[in-house]
Image (cartoon, rainbow, N blue to C red):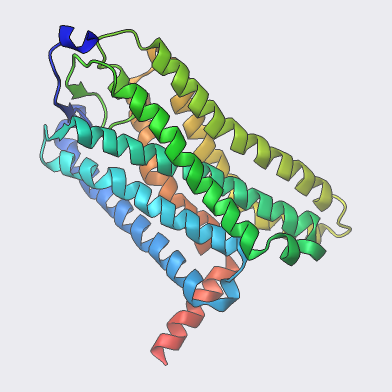
Length: 309
């Protein structure tokens, strides 16, 4: 009944980077380049892990799942963003916006919990090395991945159902995709319940992984400190450094973006954060976590050498 008191909104228009004026073409070229590099890097990682039997281990299995999830994650957001930089004021239907938000929440949640599974893998590898193959069985790896992929839809249904039951007065989304706060701002009514839902979902998706990863690394560091040689400690910690880098960037941006009051939102800050976790982080994963990894580079050389010969 409440919706009848407001003009029915059937579509939104993204404001995006319109404030950059003529520099939008430059942004288009930069973002397109990063996007292509991201797709190529993640596809290479997944392909190498599938082809090379040396990488058929739990750690690289999780990494291939993360690369696949990140690839789809960018597909949900970046192509439309690139389109809006060339063709301005492109509308998106209410259903299209809800769909984009739904898959964005699913994939963002997947990534957080996949990073948690990777943290647990590092814990078992360093703290329980003799039982690693027994503990990290194919069955457990599959359960961890299914669990990560299963949490996302629940969080997405909560967000999208609450959001798109609101009546909307505005049609201009001050962002480049259907993110939670920019869409919430267009509501005609009080959004306190939606903010509470956002805090609840965001706190669960961010703090549960961070808490579990923190516990894993406390145990990992305590085991590393027991290694006699400095070289051994350095080498062991190096296997965790890339994972920690990705976790800090990913969870840090998510915390700043979603664990704040709606009134504290800043358009410029939101755009920078969103570019970081939708464009930069998906490229950071294969570069930091994989392409600098000796095993992955060796596998790439084997695959290339095999094809040449």
